[in-house]
Length: 256
Image (cartoon, rainbow, N blue to C red; front, side):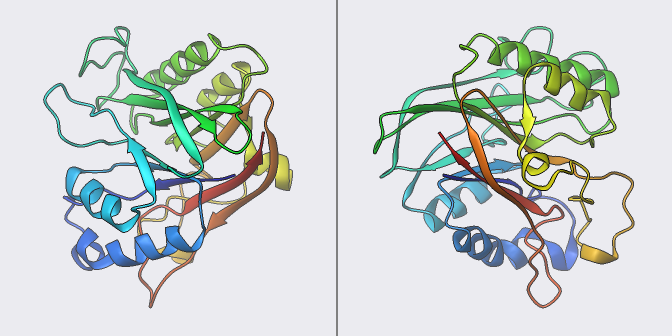
């Protein structure tokens, strides 16, 4: 199965010629060309969800909103409904009170959540749990604790149980946050395939190869349990100098 993680950049940002309305068709086209089984989005707002839901009618989706009365499924997960069925789904806040909607802790600048779905692969009857998140972009203490919470949650499942974790972690492999994921048993798919967890930046501010990065790869696809990684790619496609987002999307092909 192919998994994509896609930070699509909020539609409401003041991005001028890179506004969502100018790039949404290419964004959908690029994702469609990858023939994914599972698509994990970050920064998704309601109008983006509505557009992409129509653009991908073969997909079912789940996305808990981050705010108590919010409408934006920030970390929505899409999955092919002819290949998978949802066994269960849920989410939690990356705070000291993860069961209380809209909470944030430590020095987190934003409310952050993790969404998850347990999917049954219809052809084989096997299960896989997909977790999608977006860690804080400012607070280092927050990022470290957010990674710890996600790892502790995943440890509730048997060691061999297949799990995938995707997201914009707002940090690269030099950051202790990534160590916290590794301590929790998560393995980077790109590193497995290429022998390098630091292949270059994925956040590029709509500048592509011209960008002068502060951080290396911050968009990650991890696995744990009985999952084999087959391939992993950073998608750097552009269309007449326009990119689908200010992040490169990342893909991984995995096998249960």
